[in-house]
Image (tube, rainbow, N blue to C red; front, side, top):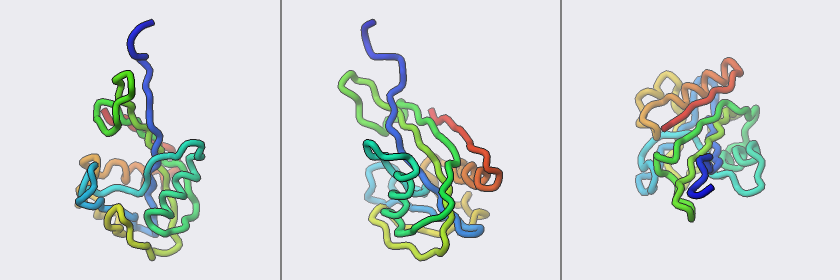
Length: 159
């Protein structure tokens, strides 16, 4: 067989939505960020080599917010197509996709530390439509909120 494999190569990431009552913690990304400057999102990042997914989500939440959270649960899985170009090409020219493991967590209080990644905001769920989201709309936070209520894990594809 010659040429690149038709199978996907992916980079794992976590994205967490932290809730406190009817509010969700949103990171409005710094205007100086290379990717998605000024856009709203949950908190998260790369899964480190050898790191378990739940540990990665907890680490990212603590690093970016200072919060220790309770009831961390997998809410969904998102497959981001390589064509969206958010990753560096491999040696064989293929561009890896991203698989995002989306988590929900509950915060006992709302005191957060300043984040170098942007501004942390507690936003009422009823107002999430007003924000400028990374993916253009609040579908991820809405899906995470639905999973929080139903316990049903969601799956999405961004291509």
